[in-house]
Length: 83
Image (cartoon, rainbow, N blue to C red; front, side):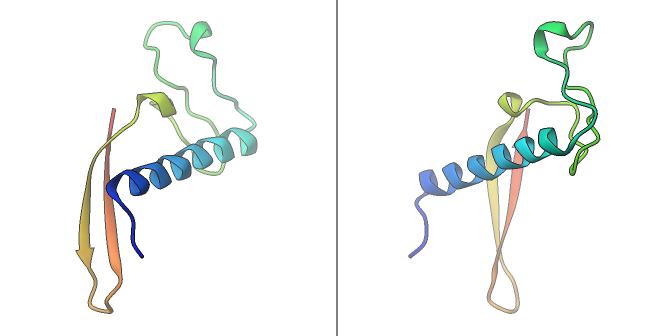
């Protein structure tokens, strides 16, 4: 069936949001709320499943997807995510 570009971007967004939620749920060191951050307002490093730091989910922008066909016929997507 495949995806439209919009559907693919939406699915990627859902997965990124899931990852950020898993990070918060699994971390002992929680994300400092934006209004309590001082100086550089980047996201603090948390110690959850993924060790996310630097940018909040709202800072991220999917700017490109590079598609490669693997020798076994599978498709590989390389996500270019910027802030």
